[in-house]
Image (cartoon, rainbow, N blue to C red; front, side, top):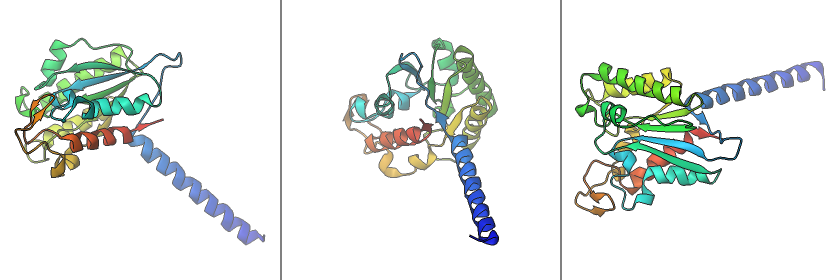
Length: 225
């Protein structure tokens, strides 16, 4: 190999390593690590939010995104679910009615879809949302956080709330998961309304089995081993 060929080879290798480093950095920017406790105890996963988190309206509870995520994580190690959710919940309801748990390793937050029930504008919502995320980190400093966006079409009304979720999530060290692209895929909604499910009669706005699977897949893609 002559000098010019060797230099070209070295340059190509350096360029490839640079691309790999940039790709890795970009991947880490949108994902969180999955860190099971070193002592073998279960990874405590906090699921906090509203009716979507509760599993409305998958046909059976095991087809909702929460148990789907837990089952997938469980193939990597022991998992313990911790619940602070209620259908119709807002930031105020969650903060006022649930004690922030401790020793959480991963928190999946689904608050904001009930944006029209929140007190005040998007900025006020964002302040409460940030305070809630900060309380999770205070109780569990090592917790990784995934913030689910609003299960709705992004428009002039919802966009400010989505922006607050994304901004405050990043400010608190979490990763934002945009659900709008999944929502607009009509096969992911629970219509037709009036179907009997484990959680009651379906409507035309909550995720169906396909929607819950899509949300679960999106969450799992944001968690790296």
